[in-house]
Length: 227
Image (cartoon, rainbow, N blue to C red):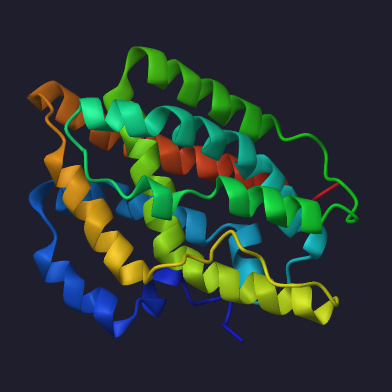
């Protein structure tokens, strides 16, 4: 079991570590900008309880229900908008979480519902506005969400599955990818290097990546004490 004082950052695989020197300049800038927000999210009560195997199935179900509408927006608008900005090689079919989320939510349907997520509604409104007005900013949310799912999300998934197993429930599909996550991360990174952005848009991409983490932090704060 992972100790709660550890963070997801210490769990990177040897292959992940080997990939770091090959990161392109934009991805390096993204990582540098979001580092502090990443550690803040790792230190939140729900993150710690999940990493320590202490989260409840109700909280896991609440997380998936809160994430579903945001991923629906990303996967509806992201492929076309990303391609228009030059990121034509994003492996959307392999990254897509829509089917897995629906399957997991259906599987957990018998678990008592948490209150409707205000943070999720705010995030979805934010994504829809960006899709219409600033698609390069929407891509920051694509990077934070899928990059996180392929990285620290793998450890979260392991702990979530262990928690569910103790309650006689099957594994989640949300964090399970059909292709090796290291390969998908390389493709994600390479696609983000393809983005054709102005200097101002580049800075806004970095700014929005921090805002994407803050949206995640609001979701996690809600889950710390489900009603």
